Length: 509
Image 1 (tube, rainbow, N blue to C red):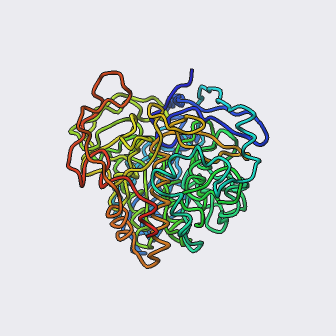
Image 2: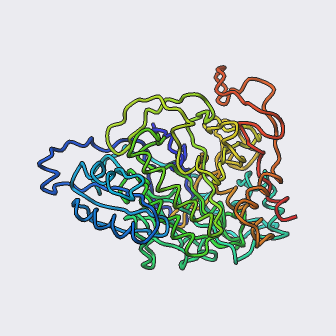
Image 3: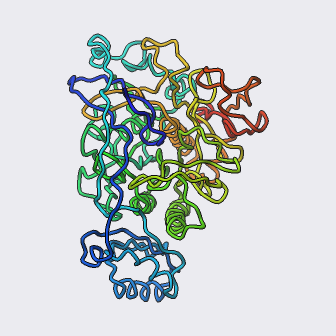
C-alpha cells in the first residue's frame, strides 16, 4: 500500500512509469525526521549546527553592523542577500535567534528549521506501477497525425486548448520558466531541446551553486521537478509527450534537500527567487510549500522570520519582472476559513497538532502578495478531490488530475502524464501538476506580450480563464456520499476555481 502525502510537491499518487530503459523506481512516501534531542552542552560544543534567518534594514551601515553582531554572537554567515536584507546564518547556539533579535536594525530573526542542518529522517517506500511493454514501446515510435507518441493520454492539453495553441504559437525562446523544485533531469530527450543551463542552479545550501549539472536530481526518487518541467515545456519533437508551451525555455533551480524527505527549507527558497530574478527568468513554478511549517504563524518569532525572508525574496523577483506561480495545496483545506487543523508541522522533527487561523498563518509561498495561487481540476473540469481552495485566495485553476475522474484515453488514467528522470514518463496528480499548466500559459502570454509586468500577466491569466462556477449539487469529490467542500462565490469568481480554469488557446489568440 502506498502512503499518500498531502504535500503538494510530492503530488498524491504512485507514478505509472513508462521507460525506454525499463529501469525500476520507487515512490517515496510520508515520514518524519527523528525528533531533535540535544542538551545545551552539546550545542555549545558544536555537536549540531542550526540554520537561522536574520532580516534587516537594507542600508549598508545597518547590514554591516548586523553582520558584526552575528559574528560576535557566534554565528557563521552562509550568505547575505544585502539587496533584500536577508542573511542566512549557521550557529550551534540554540539561543542565537533570541540574542540577535535585540540587535539594532534587525527586523526579524528566527530558526529556519527545527532540526540540525543536514539532519535526515527515513521514509517508507511504495513500488511504482508500470505499464505493459506494448504501452512503453509507444515512446520509441514516431509521432502520428501531428501528435507526440503519448499525447493521446494527455487529456490535460486538450482540456485547456494547449494542443491547438501549439499550432498557432508554441511560445518564445526568449521566455524562461524556472522550476523551483527537487531538481530537473535536463538530459531527458523531451527536455534537453528547451533547457536553459545558464538560468539553472542548486540553491540547497541557501547559496547558489551554478556548477554545470548541479540542478539535476540526485536520484530517480527526486522525480517531481522533472515531471513539472515536462508539463511546461516538453518539446514537440516526435518523442514521448508535449508540454503546454513547447517553444519556451525551462530552467531548474534545486531547493529540496538531497535525502529521502526532500524538504524545501526557507533559505533555499530565498536563494531560488533571488537567483531567478537576477538571471532574467520571467516565470517561476512553485509546486511545494516551504518546510518545516505547513502554515507559518506571525505570532511565532521563528515563523514570522520565515514569512519575512521568503516574502522579501519573492517581492524582489516581482520587482525584477518575474511572475511567481504557486500551488494551493493537496489537503482539501479551505484557505479562507476561520480555522484549520495542521497536524503535519514541523515536518523535520516531531509534528504537533495545532489549530491555525489562515488569515494570520500563511502557506508559503502561495499566500504571499502577488503570487498566483492555483487549484486543481480533473478531466471533468471540476475541483480535484484533494485540491485546497478558498474564496479570495485561489486566483486560477488548471488540470492537476483526479483518480476519480476517468478520461476517455488509452490508459483511462485521470492523472497527468509527463516526463520522469532517466528517460522515463509517468502519471502524477496534485496541485503540483496544476501549477505548471498555469506557469506555461503565463509563458505563452509573456511571449505574446513581452513587455507585460507580473501584475499584468496575472490579470491576463484571470481575464482569459473560463470559470465553470460553483457546482449546483453538494461537492463530493471522492463519491463516498459525504460533502467534502463548500464552494463560495459566483460564476465570475469563486473559491474552487478563482477566476476560472486557464486557457492556452485564448492566450495565443
